[in-house]
Image 1 (cartoon, rainbow, N blue to C red):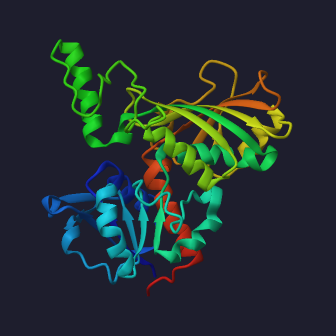
Image 2: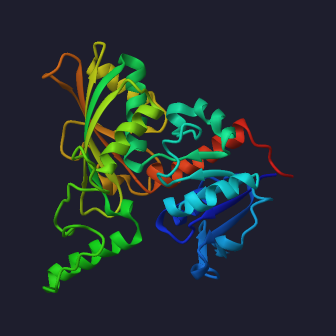
Length: 341
């Protein structure tokens, strides 16, 4: 017994990861369908270690007998097809930013706000948060429950995979070009990304912040608590997979470093690796391919009354996108959907 699941955008970096995680976690599916644009029709997509799926065209697909659609095809596709899929009776779990701030669409990180999924029936659509937000709120939730977060200052170090396949290819090409003294070509980033960092992700807004930084603010407030004040600086770094965040947190109530470490160790989805010695912390290289959100460098901030610093690392293609979407599907199945026979 199981569900029929469609992965929309199955040839993209996140779509491929969704298929992999569905197989790894043995999601209860009778059938999994790989969908993409018409130009990808007939291509093969890997599903688990040994199976492949023939990619079908999204434009021609009938969703009426499909239970869940995991969408990883961008805002344009989500805008056009999301309501059509939902109206066909298939629940949409969308990875794009298009529905995140819709008041009738729950924005879910299962470890943080699982109960909010009950509101999905308003539109039959559930939103997946931004990759940098997802790992942040997993780290913040147990601390907020312990001492009530007042303010967060976060600086991100975001890998190029967050910008897709072409961005990863650009980092590779530029790195190779530097070593062989070829011309450095910029197609996906505003500046050279190889051996560089770029404090600019998404478009600039009127107040000088970027849309990526704005997303972290409003999504954290929607998922966790509207009273939390947050300011972010989002930076693209020459790493292929894995987002890192330096997080400074100010609490309303007294905070104890030892207790904070214990609470984080006990929290779902978190692994604490925090030794004050060489290699006693986690970097994106270790986090890539893992399900956990890793927390290191936990220490008091003596410049404010109740302050704490920490380092947060996660595989952005997993917890920041594909894994979180599959976890939402698991939660949806547990709470609401009936398995097909």
